Amino acid sequence: MTLAAPTAETRSVIWQRKTRAEELRLQLADEIVRGALLPGSALDEITLADRFRVSRTPVREAIRLLVASGLVEVRAHRAALVAQPSADQLAGMFETMAELEALCACYAAERMTSLERRELEDIHDELRIMVQSGDPQRYHELNEAFHDGIYSGAHNAYLADITLSTRARVQPFRRAQFRNLGRLAKSHVEHDRVVLAILRGEQSIAASAMYAHIVTVRDEYEAYSEAH
Amino acid sequence: MTLAAPTAETRSVIWQRKTRAEELRLQLADEIVRGALLPGSALDEITLADRFRVSRTPVREAIRLLVASGLVEVRAHRAALVAQPSADQLAGMFETMAELEALCACYAAERMTSLERRELEDIHDELRIMVQSGDPQRYHELNEAFHDGIYSGAHNAYLADITLSTRARVQPFRRAQFRNLGRLAKSHVEHDRVVLAILRGEQSIAASAMYAHIVTVRDEYEAYSEAH
DNA sequence: TTTTCGCCTATTGTATGCAATTCGGCCCCT
DNA sequence: AGGGGCCGAATTGCATACAATAGGCGAAAA
Image (cartoon, rainbow over all chains, first blue to last red; front, side, top):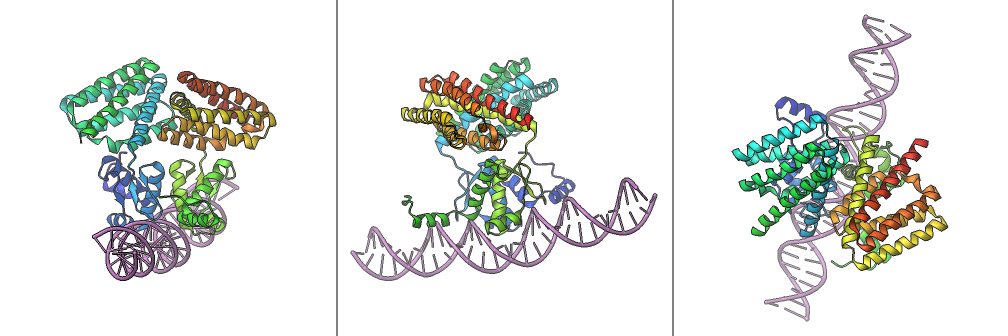
């Protein structure tokens, strides 16, 4: 979800190698995940084409790519909409995400190299500092890196793909969770259990700890959601 | 919105409601999964446009939809290719599929309605007959219905989606498995264990039985693959 | 006043033309 | 003779024009 460093030089190179449709896809996916484009809002082709200074063709291609990834929904002859799953669908996504993350943690405990384990521990330590300094934005970035590290540590590219994709699809519905500093501290305690189990190679403990962590994340979302 | 009766007239209307790109997507996905389009083969836009009597535009859109679903790969200014995962990637897909199917079976054992359980049993019984009559094509269709029944019985639409999608992506690499009549009988015995556990509501047994079933499917593929 | 029918407009879906880029082949140089 | 660079043909990427469709709006009838 992170874009390349925005130097003028690399941007021009990347721009020439990648197609405009691909750039648009990344940009739109980022805006949806970050919440700049809210679920249910319409993706008007002409407006987007005008905004990005391209024709409708690459805009349409980008939208089609996003459709299959689940972030966008279309009906024939209607504007594309940022996906707005029902409560049931969202519950299923959270449930599945918990299982997938737990599975990644299980495999990670089994398969991570010692280098990967050290890197995970480093990120975890940085997160501990963030809890105290209380920078939600930076915490969020490190948290993503933490989970990404576990995905790749599972040594299963396909599993990592669909887990990350699931996380992205759920992300628009849990943006406000890191405003609460108390949540950060609790989250770190949960991470702690996961890291300990992974470092020790305790697969089932890693899985259940991660599952519990995701369930807590879901509960926090639901509590926040009910209150607003 | 109410759906009209499926007379020839309304069918033509429905046909016009869908877009050509969507039709193409379904057609191409079917050909890829069925093996008419082999992994690694090029999807030439002009050839496809000519074949389906449309312009390149809907062909391109269909390809973009398939790209995001993982059945097709593209590089800028190169022809799209039917996805050809490496041995490692394929192994990861099989491993993930086993976990996802096991998870579906677990939830199905917990959540299936009595009607769903009866329908699953019916399909299972039909499969038993197919094993004896030995119609591989019909067996394949019923087998798909069997697994689909478990997916929907899990009562988690998102999990069902990604499991089905995973199955589709792996399908091109296990087409020849039902030629072997002995395999059909063994497969049915494995199904038997799964069905029994689901009907009894034994979640963990259902999951492990399904996991074992998928692992066997993978092993059969690998044996076949090595021999050819 | 309400409901229904039909036209109109705004937006999406498709076709086509042109630009950009890749790759194969040829030529030249060493 | 072999390797590297350059040019051309073919294919994809993008822009624009046109067609088709769904929903809005208004008028007319109940």
